[in-house]
Image (cartoon, rainbow, N blue to C red):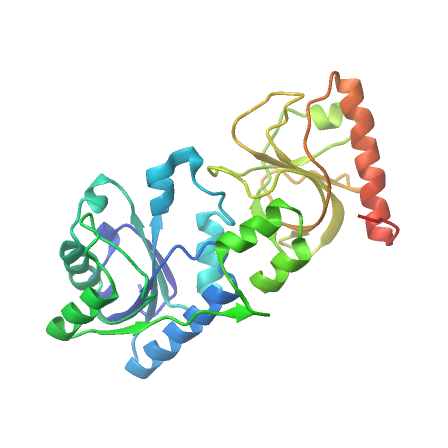
Length: 318
């Protein structure tokens, strides 16, 4: 294996000797928004100064998900999307550490020893001065600086990014998506909000209703989006298609608890099961709701399609 290659390392047990010696940062990086991208640039700059790989440490599940379960805030992106975005931003490696009882029970000093020193042999850490860790909650910026001076690694505070006086954060972007303000969310993300995934074989109900859909299982605790939206879909071959999408639990049909992304593409008839797609969201048409019959649902779907087509013609008014 080329030790300089970009890599995703899942679990401390998969660390190898060539992973030792790096400049690292720690965080959730949910959304990899413009604030995160500023931190990554800072990380990469320090790594270049040290002539060492830049490494991002993330946890799975995210700590607040571990403690809150299905009450945790919605994710902006799944782990696969996050890793792809982090590597695309220029970091050398992403280390995903399982957040479990063993990890949560580590003291702050034990976390530094186990993850940062024994695991990665870090030479420098870029981390927010509000970062807290360890079962005893003793882990903070001051402790990292103290241990760093004793054990030979430096610690730098991360920068905070503001746009038009507003701090860029995953929480703020989540709020904007929940109210359908995609333009504002795009400003903070640095790109349109999208969901990527593989098209799965479904129940074929949409086809029976005359509205065939491409289904993507979201497999997350909660989705930041709920309802019907106008979307464009990018395929791996570079082709782009317009359509409408539903994100939700399909209360008329199943009432599943796990959210599903269903996309209907206009004037599209190809079979695309198994294909990876990137679904880009533009505007919200309506909330998801339960209909009294499949006929009512079918009629509403046709209205959604007509509205979606009007949107892309430039005739749609919010």
